[in-house]
Image (cartoon, rainbow, N blue to C red):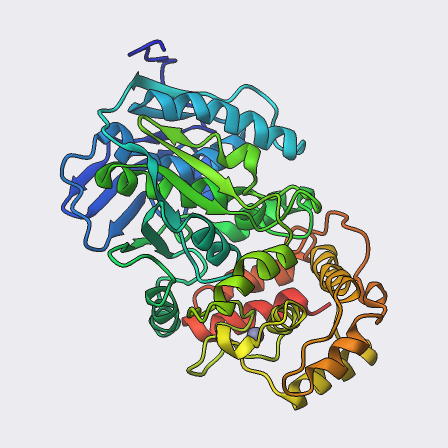
Length: 454
Ligand SMILES: [Zn+2]
């Protein structure tokens, strides 16, 4: 490894982002940014901040402490056709970053294809991590629960990020999710770390979507590009501080259903630093496999579990799962197909909710994207391959019907790129931008209404 080879290229260009040395204080890291004229369009703040609850960062090498900021900045600079300049960076992370850039460029040919550079002094950061012990990103969903249960003996720390799926301003939702995370099926003594960060607020995601989402397969900047690198990078300082050599991130998709997505084995496994590496977990398992082979056996032993799966998480209320949205019903159906009572995993349902879901499907009122369709078909396969249908609250009759229902008739079309914001008329795009100034709960509803209408 070539140590200390700064690639100084003179003054930074319009498309570049200059990243300052990290300021580390107690449990906080803040990193100032200076984006060039073009790159600046995509930043709403000039600083990336992260605060790790109950973790003193004393002794974390600045070459690693800068990694969370780089996880936010690199994809944006790449999409601008620019580079990232930093005073010094961990040499192992920098090597991986070159591969990450190439992988993202291959996934998204509409990004500029010139060579990306992360310039700055490269040096191996001091590290004394155990290569077998792990931290993991945890949200309480089926994917992260599966990873936790599979690797439970090795997981010493679960990290939940506030500022990713839950906005920093939404303390009510955060409180409800915190209860789920606190009930994670960890070994006694496992640490829970909350990482609170402006990693999303710092970016103008709406503008990134406007300019780039034409090339994404039915998702947005955060899902298609940013989330894997940004979230895994955020864990690096914690892993180093706690001496953990592995950071696990759960797969969302599986080998059987591949779409370009911002977290996959090729990308995530390139995120590494001196003494630590990310492992994308569970890609070989389809969602129904996770429920049937990991979640169901855990519950069958009488162990506890609280899942947080709902698409309606931001609604008013006290529970975490509504039991009525597509994702709740998909998870309920998958658990029933795996002979598990969904109540045992915190998913409310009864005979009435199964009947009304069935009616919605029969009337064609629900629609599935290709990924959802793939998972519903996985449930049907499990039902067809099984023997007796599970009976609780009238579930056997529902499952018997679901087994042969034509779910493909509700699919929304081939997995073609579907721009959500990039194709909006200008007035509607500007209305969405204006909506950002409205208080949080109103804004969220307004944004949904505007992007769906028309
Ligand atoms: Zn729901």
